[in-house]
Image 1 (cartoon, one colour):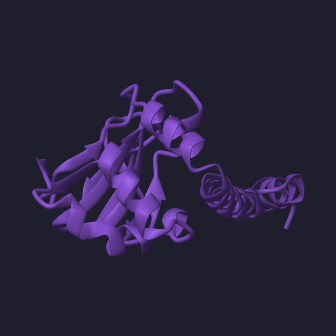
Image 2: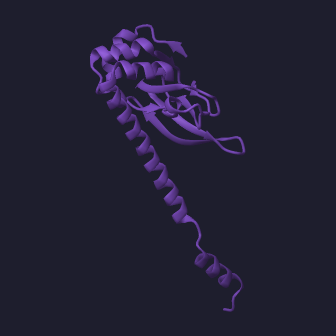
Image 3: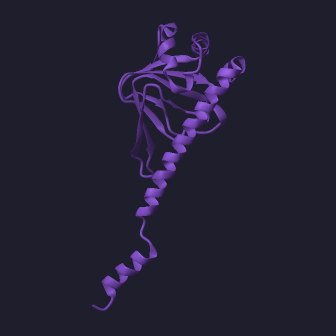
Length: 175
C-alpha cells in the first residue's frame, strides 16, 4: 500500500463513486483533503477480517474481492466490488470488528476516510452530506436484501420433514 502522489487530480474519479456523486467539485476536493488515497497491488489486503477499524472506503479504480474465513481456516469468496463502489460502512456508524477480508484483485486506487474526518466533513457540508448518507444507507439496504435472498435460497434448499419421512420410508419401509 502506498499513498497516491496526486490526490488533487482525482476529483472527477472520486465523484464517480456512487456515494459521492452529489458532491460539488469543491466539496469533493474537501473530502479528498481529509481522506487518504491509497494504491494497492494485486493480492494486497485492504481490510482484514477481525480487525477493529474506523475507516470507510470508496473504490476509485480497480477491483477488490471480499472473502470471509471458514471455521476450518480457509477463505470463502463472497463477491467482488469495482470502481464506484464502497465498503466498510459499519466503520462509520459503529466501533466493530471487520466481518470480511478485502483484497485487491488488481491494482486498485482506494479512498479511505476515518469516521472522525467523515463526520466533520458531513457537518461542514450538511446538504450534500445528507445525500451521501442516504446513498450509503441505500447501499447497506441493497446488501441486506442480497443477503436475505441468499438466506432464503439456502433455506429453500433445506430438506423439509416430508422429505426426511419419504427418505426413511424409501430406505426402511416396505416395498
